[in-house]
Structure formats: C-alpha cells, structure tokens
Amino acid sequence: MGLIKSQIVLRHLCVTFIGILSFSAASVCHAEKPLHIAVASNFKSTLDVLAQHFTASTQIPIIISQGSSGQLFAQIENGAPYDLFFSADQARPKSLELLGLVFKNNDTSYRKTYGIGKLILWMKPNQKKRISEQIHIEINHLSASQYLKNLPPSEHPLRLSIANPNTAPYGIAAKSFLQNINLWPTLQKDIIRAQNVGQVFQHVQSGNSPLGILALSQLHYAKVNQQHYIAIPPQLHPAIIQQVVVLKSAPQRDQAMQFYQWLDQQSIRALIQQAGYSVPLK
Image (tube, rainbow, N blue to C red; front, side):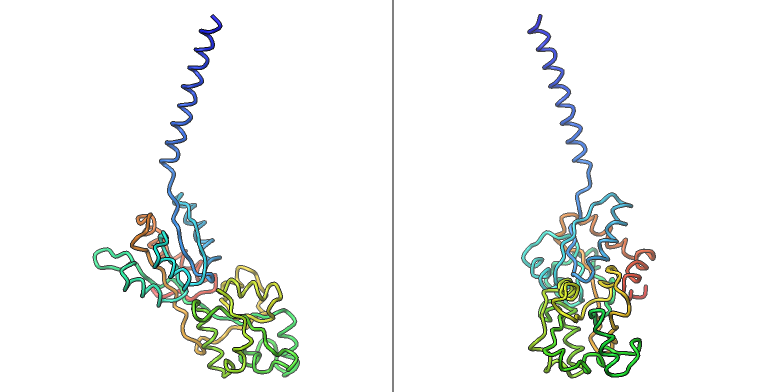
C-alpha cells in the first residue's frame, strides 16, 4: 500500500509540475518582446520618459542603448540589432537611408525630425557671478561669448568640456560656436573632448571641468538652476536638427513603426518641447 500511495503522490506532483511549466511557457509566448532603441546621449533622459508612457499604454517594453550619434551609427552599419535610432543630427539618418538601412514602405522612408536641440554653456555656481562682477554686467544679461572672452588670467588654461566634434553633433555645434566668436584657435589645445554630451555633463557636475557646452534638455532633467547656465544663440552654430529612423533590419518592426507613429501625438510632442527642444511644425 505504501508503494501505491507513493506512486499516486509522485504522479500528482508530475502533473502539477507539467501544468506549471505549460502556464509559464504560455506566459512567455504572450509576453511582448522588447523594442531596442539606440539614442544619442542628449535625448536619453527624454526618451526614458517617453518610453515609460509608451510601455504603460501598450505593454511593449523598451531597452535603451545610448552613446554618441557617430558611435551608434557605426554599430548600426556593423549590424547591431536596434529597432529605432534617435540621432542628434540629420546627417547620419540620411546616410543610413542612402545605405539602404532605413525601412521603407511604398517608397515612404521611415525617417523624420523629432526635435531641434538647444545649446547652452553650463558652469559651476560661483563662476558666472565672479565674471559678471569683473566686467560689470548683470548676470541675466551676460552672454556666452562675453563670458568666455572675459575670463580672467587665473582661469587659463580653460578646461572647457565639449563633446567630440568628430562623432557628436553637439560637439560640432560647440566647435562652430567657438569658431564664430573667434575663440577656437585660442582654446582648442586645452579643451576636454568628451565622448558625448552625457560625459560633458559628468565632467562639469563632478568638478573635473568648470565649464561645459551641452544640451539644454540635460539640465532640464537635472533641475539645474537657470542662473548657472547661459543659452547660446542659435545663429552662432548650425541648427541641431535631430532625426529618428526605423531600421530596415529591425527585429520588432511592427512595434517600431507603432512607436514611430506614436511620436506624432500632440501630447508627446509637448513632452519633447518641455524637455528643452523645439519641435517641427506639423
């Protein structure tokens, strides 16, 4: 009798275990596979917010990989399995399109502008006050070019941090600004070239650099006081037109197209604008 009871109990346990396995397998099968999005560092914090909204409404999870636009472009060229790419420029999305790496449907390319970046000069809290006192200008009227041109000798060599102009669009814009105010020849040998604007933020925040040129959106999410940075006039650098593409090789193409179209909702455009970008007219 003991043997029979043991066999019955064992059979019951096996049936229960198989049922659990079947339920787990079904759950996995019905779970949405994640979208994998590559994003330029300046837009990472904004995309985090957008991803939360999208996942909450669709149950589609999102994995985000950040870097400079140039680094991510090279990864995509080499077959990285991203679904979408948010670049900090329009040049690389256009190049991907010419290479045949952007998804097209009925001759319509899935490439568009999602925002126009704004460049700022960020400094340690005591920097702007000291310079404004020296040149007798009210803090609110101190321009970025005035600030840099009137740095006292004690501030040289200037450890200004910018993103690498060879790989990062915000680095290109920063270099162009310094060239337009005739400071690039003087400052270039001492400039700290970061991999991307995310690293520029780290340099200034940690104190490794007293000054950095980066994206307004980064300071929006860090809740940096407006008195600690100066807007750089857009006429002093090339427009930072930022585009997104759905990649032809996207493993989750349908979900990628859904996210791409979702970006056009007015409420989502408003979130991008609030984060420190201009948005294109519809």
